[in-house]
View 1 (cartoon, helix red, strand yellow):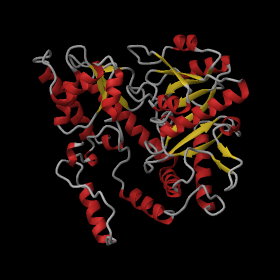
View 2: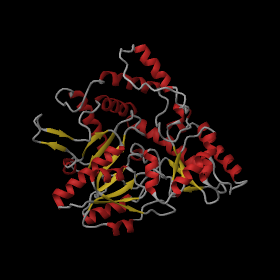
View 3: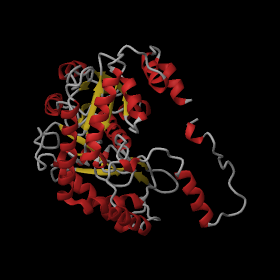
View 4: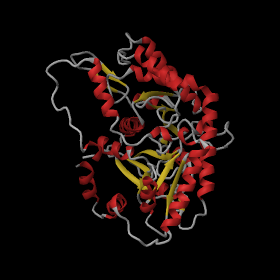
Length: 446
């Protein structure tokens, strides 16, 4: 059990009598105080992407209150919320240069967006090509949501290695993995989560077009950065529907879109693909039941808050936020490059900077930084950790503090680089060294 709960009691039975609102909120306040990490100080990697904007919070609170009982499933009742949802989907398709036939759906997050794309291509492959043993070809760095989709949807997942220096997927090996059963060719992420590297999307889009295989771009992490990078002064190669081979894109609005958690968008170049995303029960006694996403009922309030947040920032606001984040990322890269014993993993193309070491156990550095208040993401294969830069990090004081802390901690470690890890660092290092991954799986589910 999480040590934060060590001295707390759980309410294990529904109270026999109603609680007053004052008592409920008081208890909630105590629960919220259990968290020992104050994300507002800018010491957390990712997790919270927005800045401390009271005006935005107040607006979203009002929007949520106005729409708290709405459900987009009942399109005849909650017409306004459905209109908001339709508009924000169109805004996203336009951001990714979708044509007049482009379309999409709003989902609860990146994993659902990924799973829906896989479901659409599985069914498309079955009904259009007669594929009964579907496969998808993805980089090893692709989001674990694709593996989850493989488990749920009975799709064989073929993992392709990445270049050990750039961390970009090996397109030649991807080409060799294509078979008659390949239903989806994942272009990789823009960027991928572990190292922040963008895969060679244009090459893989061409590969998909040549073999007539759908191509998915997973932009869940960078979805509201990469469309604005060029306007922010950071040119990028094409990554979206401008490429003929790209047939779908997932982008999380609840990350750099600064909307409440629980919102993402899956987009298709043509409505033909979205048709296979839907689930329809035509003979149910309750009537024809058709749903576009994994959920039936959905929280209209999340759609409303997402719609409101996108309007609040507008294109100009997102360009400005992107400029700050990318500039901060590159400042940290410059400030931490060339440190003896430390190396940057992959290419930090957008907002993620990953670190590793050939000289010492990198988890010792992660542990040292955690003792200084940093909460970073640990990586494996290869061992490392990363910082995902958000609006909370763009303050010069925060960026400079991270740079100086890394420099000081590495200097201390290099006094005795061979010293073994202890505590949490040792546990994480041990976990990735266990050859039987079923043991790790069992421990994770415990």
